[in-house]
Amino acid sequence: MEKTTIGICDDEIQICKITEKKLLEILNNLYGDDDEYFEIKLYDNASELLDDIPDIDIVFLDIEMPEMDGLEAGKIIFEKNQDCRIIMATSNEKRYSEAFKINAHRYINKPLQDEDIEEALVSAINKTVGNSTIEVFQNRIKYNITQNEILYIQAYNGYVEVYTLNNVFTKNVSLDQIETELDSRLFFRIHRQYIVGLKYVACVVKNEIELNNGEKLTISRRNTLKFQQAYVEYDLNFGG
View 1: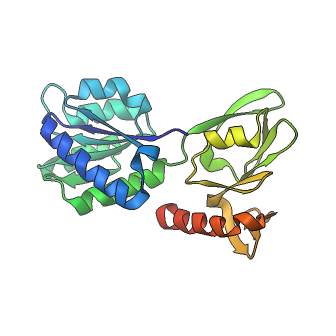
View 2: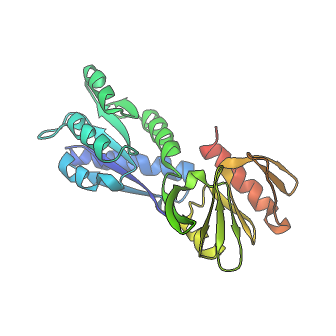
């Protein structure tokens, strides 16, 4: 499973470390074992950050930095990785208007307050989780679809079918194998033959799930309670 990578860029490395500590506390409180789902990288200059930006999902970016400031770096980030959520930090509110030009996700004041960091972080995570892709096939043509698109996956003998709202894809792997590629926060294995995307669960009646497209799937009895717990956790963290 791919992790959500969070970058922190500030020319004062001590501020990076303080922000990292706050992020770790928030992630542990909200998501438990953060090492399983998140990776944090620190940068004391924009140039090093830009080298890694294709692989970064969320970045806390200081506006006032020498050599290359956060706004200049933000423009390049937006060009290289439009899926990266940029959280701009500044002690100069007059520069907020400039930050709009780079389509920043949030703007927060320095010194950073815990509640501002948490709101910006959670909002960004909700936008990025599930954006990683998975390789599938249709008529022998390879496609990369985002995990957020997957309604459910059904196992057959030696391969799986991956269902989205508008298409059905195949992949020559077992259900066990494809399960390791998925974000466990977003999917649940309800049966030895089925994995469902929690995002698309419309309702649950006893041990039957109805998906948003009207299809119904049965949860095995031994997985019913665990599914209910997983669905509640998903709804608390990513629902709405």
